[in-house]
Length: 247
Image 1 (spheres, rainbow, N blue to C red):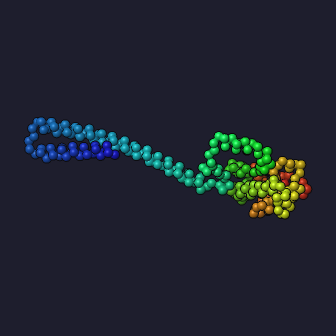
Image 2: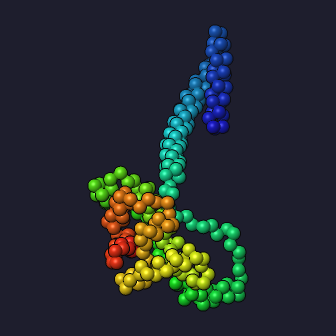
């Protein structure tokens, strides 16, 4: 911008000089003055061309800046939209900022302890149902979806996972450490297992009622059909009981 201001000031000075010469043109000018006036007019013309060139360059820069501003504005709107539309069921990574820094010897001892506990922790690992993706939801036939929305379907997934975690938390504990109610549940869970469910995680309708607020009704049965369609679970029947096994 300072370059344009300098050129503008220089042109203004030239015009003032020419104006002064024209004011003096009322009297007869010597040949040298007329020649000087022609040189000033030629210099002024060159300055005007340079000024127009600079103005054109600045206009081009301004156009590019406006286009860039529009790109940034669109990106900002996209980010805000994504932030507002993040599904409640989406898992979030835990931050690592508060983790202590360990030296090599401490790291080695921790790693050794972890390796020793692998077998112990294997039994406590609970399989969870993966959330339904948008493409999977769109692939479900409309007659099967009914009025169930994408978020409602994944809320049901979250409830089932809650029930699974609660059930197997009890099963993975020592019976002696459980209270009376938990012991009854533990025994019920054991009685419901069959050779077809060995090593698998499953829940029944009573587990959904026990550990979640979800209603086990006709709508819930429709949701189970959708989850079977998406290959998240399968049914294992027997003994008058339907077991919903996680895949």
